[in-house]
Length: 268
Image 1: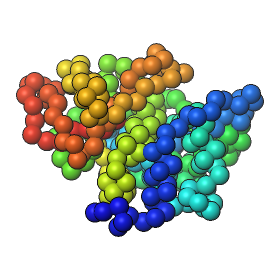
Image 2 (image 1 turned 90 degrees about the horizontal axis):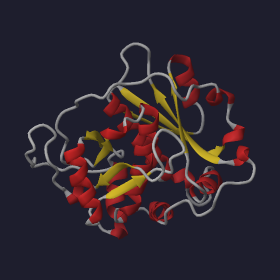
Image 3 (image 1 turned 45 degrees about the vertical axis):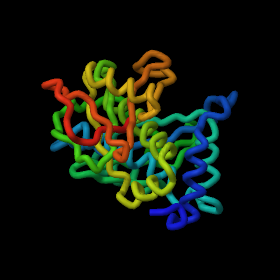
């Protein structure tokens, strides 16, 4: 695919994402702080696998950022730009049953991967939340780490530092940051192809050996790192997720044997 084959509107939205974020500080009034609310569907019975739910959250966040409705003249443009050009924040909440259905009625993007689903809402001031979102819990239900198996080599992978012990809500926000950074770092034609594939990705926990290898990729310019501001759970400046595109196909040590697998690994 050549750049000429990419939709012009997508090119403009990708350019906005690629310019980075956090250009301005917080407003004096805390109620005006901008945040993207991400709602995780966690039913009481048969909850999703943690890795699958995190992948859905990551895809929902980046899908909203590149949705045509945030583009020039779109209904979400001003709300999105007001958030993207300020200090980026995501707030993750959980919902089930009627609360989940109510959340998905609000403007945003829903992504479903297998048994998992997440809804990223159009960003806005934290002091003006819709009551249907405000009443959803931020903490609470936790999902244990799972062992989802080998990564599909066609997918980017979001590697989470397992040593940090982040809750599923914190990790969901971090992989959402990672998917945005990855999409912005990709050439526009690769980002467009990823969008056409539904922003499918994999999320995996990295053990210390894998994390060391991934940090080396970051230092070599072959991967992108998410560094957290440290408002919750982790120390300021902690690297929480490391992302590498599937196209780069880096190799990291296997978590169990120490062997290097012949498959793509990757994103934050």
